Image (tube, rainbow, N blue to C red; front, side):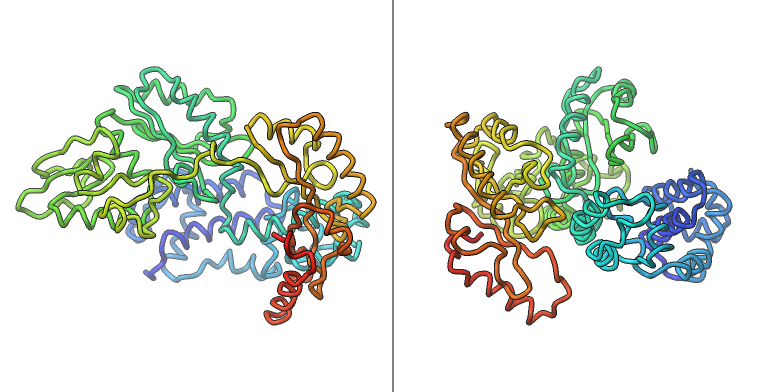
Length: 488
């Protein structure tokens, strides 16, 4: 056996499934690989040992064909079927599946007609107006694809994770639903959503109840759930119908709730430091609680720490930190970035920014460019949030693919801003724009226009292929704009 980790196995299955979609395989077969990747990612079994014993098919969702390919990868470090498929396609073609509204069939069509095999090639073809000429695309689709390329790049840079803002509403709605389940004592968000990370991979929910079964039964009736990925005595995993987001719900006795909540909130780096500190004090910490150890060897990951001398009472997360002589660490700070040193000195801030502290926004697109809502609707929402100011910053004229405003349209919008301001006097409207930084560092509006704005956001939306020196000069030139006092 070669040293192939679980992550490599999961990625190989996911990639194989995507290539099969590009090749026109039926949905049942491609979905089998997606499900197998999910099952492998969630298992705690020794996969190498199972493969050596020919027992991979004992895992849920792993059929004979997939087991054969996994065994090959584990034993040789390669998967022949995947390598064959890779050889048929350009090396970066899977990037295109990150583009909104661009599925496998359209990616295959783009490659067949225009030999497009990467985000850069798609962007170039759209700018040349070649995509609109293809059957099933058209000018509007081409413009949307061009605007979506940058979003795809950002998503890839974030590791395929989702923005917190795109997940948070669904997460809170599901949490409220769980709280209403029969027998629930307490419930909370966990994971990176609770830590308020900028991007998240999935949603963790935790609840306490004397009987988990009624809670799971209630949870599975939520209309947004499209698929049950797995269900056990203490955990149920589902995928949401519209967003394809995975949600894990854990239900456990209330005495274990605080410890489990802390464990499944993370981060991994924070837990490593915390457990190290606990061991120095003769304690061990897991999702099942905090235990004071005897003189013997500490248990190695046993379920409920059988052999531990004493389980200590942890009603709230603050109790766990107090046992270690630490100030309570809020979830948002649990990243091992200095919070332990501050907590030991009881010097952690207690005034973290809350929603009530946010008094306005500095960047917004309305239907004047590529936004989904009218300016009036957005300002109305801002007033409902208690905002004191609202900054209007549409795309500028170079970004015509995103509805960028010409100088005349920009000035016409100023008239609407004035009208909306009269209707909503409690919210100060600031006139702004998101101005493109051109290749030489100039902004794409003349200075006499820029100086009439309250806020100017400068952005690069084209010519990404410049070398480091040229790109640096480009940005510095933008900062040297005479109107730089208002450049953000």
